[in-house]
Length: 89
Image (cartoon, rainbow, N blue to C red; front, top):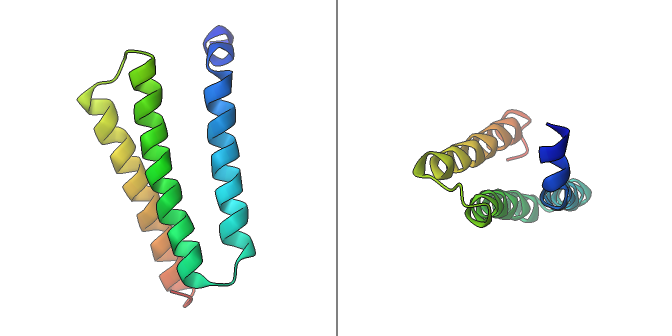
């Protein structure tokens, strides 16, 4: 398990950096449309990152693409729901 993590450390580090930067951008801005744009762009890049990661490692399958798309959609749904419940959307 640790060998596999160390082999993909650069991928995981880049993903954590992208998600952290996106969180900071969305959290620090008071412009709601900018926040939504950052969230949608982050979701798009998350799905793209996952597909490219599996493509490079030669284990890309339709099931994996669908999984990344569904998780991205689920994340967007949760955030939009939370924004609408808080009255800020």
